[in-house]
Length: 380
Ligand SMILES: CC(C)=CCC/C(C)=C/CC/C(C)=C/COP(=O)(O)OP(=O)(O)O
Image 1 (tube, rainbow, N blue to C red):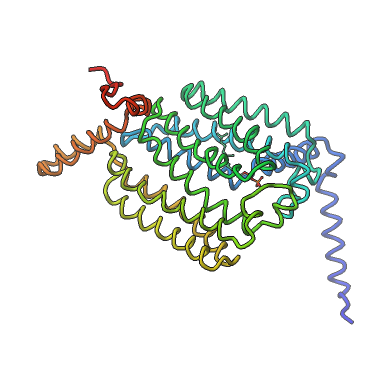
Image 2: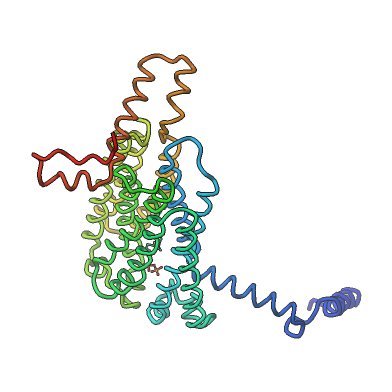
């Protein structure tokens, strides 16, 4: 049998005695216990915020802000305020309220049972206080540092997520589509924070997010189907034992994303490179959805989930890399003495951009009455 040498026993006792001599007792020293308590709650707040989901939400809002800026120089403080406001409303408040309403459901699901509320690591009043304070501060931050459109979108989305989507999960499979609207709002919020308005071309990234969420959540719902059933949620996958319908819905929504790259170009948001990139990307995710449709296995559903996780960051990076900003481009081309065709392209882009920059109301109000002139939102 292995025995420790006297020297090793002596040195471990010595290090233990030194440790207890120098390190203050955690629960007797008020300073240390306060630090520990702060650390404990910081971790619980972080968990309540569903950190990974929140990072994604903030990233979409930040991308919306940069796209909505419309010129080369992005106002960094505005971007930071927008991201912080979105983080507070979306992550801290919306996600905390969602978990407060779903304590008993989350406790029954393997995926969620270790969350701070079902596992009893934070009390309900504490979580409610955190959600209210974070939500109100986030809305005030957006209202004071950006504008009321962004603050209003944030507050409305909080209500939609916590008070419409969350209860709907236990009532009807349509919840996934309502959830897709919730996920599509943050980039619109970001755009509104930068530009103070909602225009047609501000809808491209939200549309992508809306359609993208369907294959993403269909894959999740198929993979975690027994967990969702245990939690009492009504997901489409629970009414679809073969997975065929779930996969068909995912595939259909992948195809809806195909025109987005062309629309982004046509409306002057990106260069033509983005059409190619976006088409290749959507065809790749559609291929995984088709494979899931054909085979209906867990393996194929997982592949579609992984493809969806890759899709969004690449799509958003493409939008940012190929975005077209007008006010700095024309002078640069002129100074560089570039050909007429190059500056002609810039003028065309600006025209397209101007057309798409009109608020959607200009189109929708004209649509049922094609004989009426479309109202112009521009002052001459
Ligand atoms: C500005 C603002 C308020 C933005 C909100 C952004 C936000 C929280 C988007 C999440 C969208 C969504 C449907 C998530 C799934 O929640 P789930 O409840 O199905 O997830 P779970 O099963 O893990 O709890």
